[in-house]
Length: 150
Image 1 (cartoon, rainbow, N blue to C red):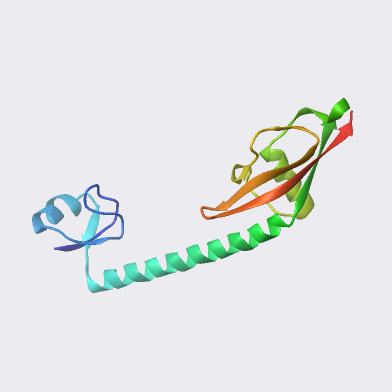
Image 2: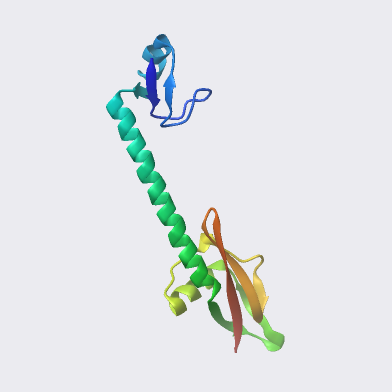
């Protein structure tokens, strides 16, 4: 019997797969538990259309991330914070501070979880942060930390 999996089934396949399974397995296990549905021509065609739409959406998101990455690579974010003598900061600059400065200066809103500063910045100077925009798209952002006298 041909079925379309509605959920992942360990040992059989992932959601959306079309399988040939024993009729008893389908009727007694997969169908009653809502793990699969019968594979008719209409459902198979609908599944193919959904996959194609999903691939187009993913491709569009990847392209948007690549455009944003190119824009971020060319920017420098200036973070102003209180500093003492010798350029030592009171506290540190982390990914939240970089995300806030990026939004304020360049009108680009990024989630702080997508930004990665290797370690908290505790000195005035130039650093870089990594923005993970998409699983395959990353961008380096130049961060300039400027100290203000307390």
